[in-house]
Amino acid sequence: MFKKILIANRGEIAVRVIRACKEMGVETVAVYSTADADALHVALADEAYCIGGPRPQESYLNEEAILTCAVASGAAAIHPGYGFLSENASFARKCRECGLVFIGPSPEVIERMGDKDAARRCARDAGVPIVPGCDLLANPEEAVQEATRIGCPVLIKARAGGGGRGIRRVERPEDAGSAFMEAKLEAEAAFGDGECYMEKFVHPAHHVEVQILADAHGGVVALGERECSVQRRNQKLLEESPAPCLEGRDDIRDHMYRAACDLARAVGYVGAGTIEYLYADDGSFYFMEMNTRLQVEHPVTEFVTDVDLVKWQLRVAAGARLPFCQDDIHITKHAIECRINAEDAQFRPSCGTVRMLHVPNGPWVRFDSALYPGAVVPPYYDSMLGKLIVCSPTREEAIRKMRSALSELMVEGVQENSDLQLDILANPEFLSGTYHTNLMEHLYES
Ligand code: ADP
Ligand code: ADP
Ligand code: MG
Image (cartoon, rainbow, N blue to C red; front, side, top):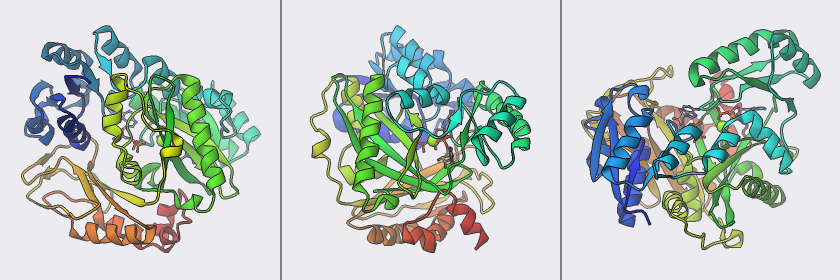
């Protein structure tokens, strides 16, 4: 095992990784921006270094500063968390050049899967069903032609997209040209890469994703699935496992797991990763993308499988073999996660200083966050304050448990979305378990 690692992230995920390291006897190095001098991850790490100004480019995306800190502090590996540098192949390559282990798959795998258009072809070649669509679009005219051929509605998607950005829905072929230009510009600004492809808009559909874990010796397991169909603007709000839409469909579930593991094997995947699918009620499913990193919603899987994903990321990165196989994974519980975002009722980001904080507690209640009374929520980063996760023997009980936990959560000084989460948990469509990715649109209509 590594003696010391550097955590190239902030907020709840940096805290999550530091805690795992402490339990494993691994020393930790935190890096932080000038806006995060009083942040929890800085206080919890064994060593901490300020690497630049508040803007991500100056600090959490400042590759040179991070690599310098890692080498100078004697760290053996870097954990990138999610977001920031976690899916940056060139950073993973630089780690390798500096003699550091990047805790994640190889730069080659990140490169292949990070390009969503190339990943589609890779999935197809591994025998995984993909959404009808086309390869990269050259110009607006081609977008119109392809929208006509594929049949509207379609989505124009940036190959470098992430976090729900760089996606445009097209209802009529004649609108595809302008939508293509919009998606391209948004993707250029957000990811520095404006290349886009097109997919049939599958609806109504469920977002179902499979968590995989792979070692460097050919061992691959699927650690169950998560349903992430509660989304606003293609961004996840609430996740649960098992997926209610797969209730009684073990045949499909097994097929999804096998396809995910086949793809992981085909590309030589090592580490924790997620294969995202769209699932339609007729039983068909399609590959959407692969996230080559730890996922925000990983605690849902940890609760139902009793597997600590962060610890296993470290172990397989250090060369360990997975001691369990697919037959050892039995899921008999139900877990739900609510993302607690710093935003007002109009979804505008909220920031400030946390004046008062009460965090729900009790058996099988987990609150992953970097909050404490007096903590500052700066305006420069993602608006997620934390994640509330609960686990129960049944979905019904998990929903009641989440309601109870949410109603206990109190944050003063920064606005948060727990009332919205309570509305979702009271929605009849959500309660029935038959909801699709358009649930939030329905919630606002009612
Ligand atoms: P998950 O699939 O884990 O739920 P999200 O798509 O919600 O992932 O993204 C996780 C985090 O990473 C969010 O904070 C999001 O803003 C950020 N993120 C995702 N993709 C990118 C990207 N390509 N560039 C920058 N940040 C990203
Ligand atoms: P990101 O990298 O931003 O997470 P994804 O490709 O995972 O992008 O898509 C984000 C969300 O957009 C999905 O969870 C799903 O709700 C919706 N989506 C993406 N592709 C399609 C599609 N072809 N049909 C219907 N919905 C889609
Ligand atoms: Mg996605």
